[in-house]
Amino acid sequence: MPYAVILAVLAGFLGRYLPAAESGVATFDVRQFGAKGDGNTLDTEAVQKAIDACGQAGGGTVSLPAGTYLSKPLTLRSRTTLLLEAGATLKATDERADFQSERGRSFVPFIGGTDLEEITIAGRGVIDGSGPKWWVPAEAARQKTPGYTLPRPNLIVLTRVKGLVVRDVTLQNSPKFHLVPSECDDVLITNVTFLAPESAPNTDAIDPSLCRRVTITHCLIDVGDDNVAVKSGRHLEGRQFGCEDITVTDCTLKHGHGVSIGSETIGGVKNMVVRNCTFQDTDNGIRIKSDRQRGGTINGLLCENITMKDVRGAITITSYYPKIPATDAAQPITATTPRYENIVIRNLTATSSRAAGVIVGLPESHVQNVLLENVNITAEQTGLEIRNAKGVVFKHVKVTPKRGQAVITPDSEVEGLEPGN
Image 1 (cartoon, rainbow, N blue to C red):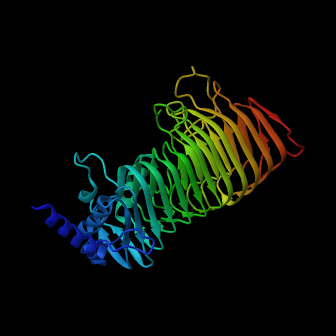
Image 2: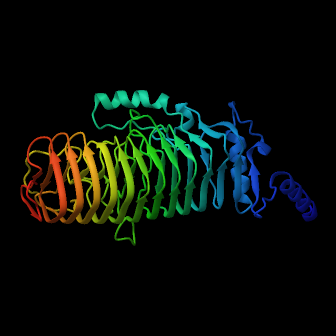
Image 3: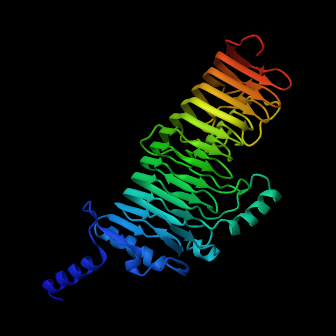
């Protein structure tokens, strides 16, 4: 084909499908690629074509106008903004075969992408994972084997993305985890609503895994498992810490399991901040969880200006997971021994329907350098247990349990305990 003809064909394609937005960025309307948005037609091919065209053009905005777009899994491209306009729902199918990997042993996410740059998911619309069909067998499996997670798809998994923004959208009803940035740098999650029933198993909202420079702000999170779970499951070459500089600020958490580090912490976590957040009816408040097989170094956790109401344990820092034994003997320190140090919890007010909480290290690896300042916890059951910890400092701390001792401190060094605690 002559070069002039190729240029003419390309120009016609661009003129039809890539109208320039006012900002000068190309816009790819999925309806122009054949999407119906009627909630019944399978729009996978049309939406993916729009995404691919955007990537091939060097970037732009893939626009989903109001409507319900039923789709199988989709793959994003670099420098793409996926824009769900008000009234738009991108809805996953719920057929197992649509999400099984080629080998059939695992599942692909509803929205995925690997080795990308400048990805944005935005707008006032909804991404819905059609989770109810998946939750029933998952809960049955969990009831049969406590702690078991039945394999099933996540809603969004983005791997090795440099520059990820998720803003203003609603992410709901994922079969399993909602948003998993993995090995990503420079992540902003702002003004996002995460929704799943309290009973929906393993429906974590945000699970940053091996990420650096992550900000989660002004989000409403109401799910059936971890509201935020920072994970560092392996060592990455060239990094001392797999996760660094994670900030959760000005968020409202309703139901779910609180803000967690772990349970996978082998790669280590450095410098996490939780600030100006409200917890209500969550299973936990602030939590670090790991064990001797999956542990690593957690260095630097700052939690301040926190309000908790009717949580089931305000502070849970434990080197045992899932269960803390009544007694334990020291074991040899290994590469996967949990090490927690330099933790500050300041300006926290909480009511707990169970215990005030725990700070429990290992006999061979004590939790070190913990400051509790201006902390007030009222618990319907027992107080705050501190075991295998040293360098714990209390400043203006009040723990009021319904029964038993306010602060229990076996095998620990605690400075600043006031009368009544």
